[in-house]
Length: 379
Image 1: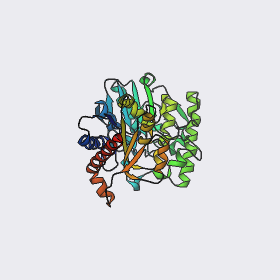
Image 2: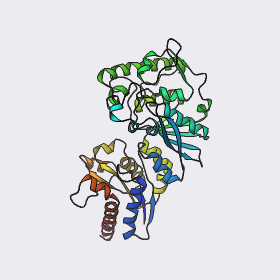
Image 3: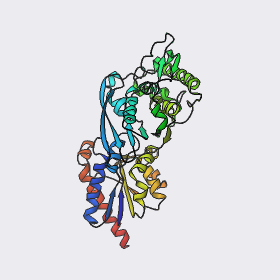
Image 4: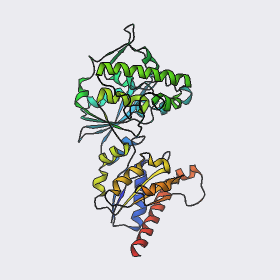
């Protein structure tokens, strides 16, 4: 038998690699001679770098960059030397987890550090940069990242613009003369599942600004500031991408990546699946086991089990999900390539217990799946 194990991480419990290892141990108790292929996955959010490096034997690199509020942080990123590809999680440099809840400020937070990570990738010789842009603390339309890459932003007094989205309201001139010329030779892919435009009622400021600390008044101010930035970018670049799907992702970093870098958007799980070779692994497979911490109707929005099930279904491979919990609406996934889903808990337990005992529970449920599979084969 050939079984592909392609789970996401279980938040606050196990990495995707840890989940895959536990499932493999459980399957091996029943199928000691089976071919077990582990493809740890992610959906373009937290854990993307870790999953790709685990599957591709890449390098974890660390770079000192400016955090969202200007304080220096050490940000990790992935490097695949065999194909000169860098994998960057913007949250490492510009993420919400880097700012205490009481200090979150969507008006002044900047993506400058993300730009510094891109520059580090260029210095390493990257020919392709994959940006996983979930979990941002910023709402500056990617202006800070572009400044780190050589774009100069001036106010009416010819002073360099202050960081943050609100300062973009004072933007008077964009100077591209010092932009890093290496950018034009690199392929940029954005791993994201957000389709919002930059501005308007469904834009970056309105939808995501409040969780980053913006008040209703500030949301309105930020939306106007980002619109002004888009106006001047359209003049400087001779193209306007503000209304394209994804431009509002990560506080508008999607906009800058499209406008300045020519980036293409892909569903995060599809990018990771490509890098870890999931499609090839599924050739001739008898079963795919995937999983995530909570499996519910939200999984339909581009999360890992949904994405890998689509790839498996195209190849006629049945799919089983192991999840920390089965939430409301999970049955909808049975119409999208999922054949069965199981929760880990074997009895009443707290969330803390489930997290701490996840390796054992995953191993036991995987063993159960293998035993049931054997019964079905005999029927």
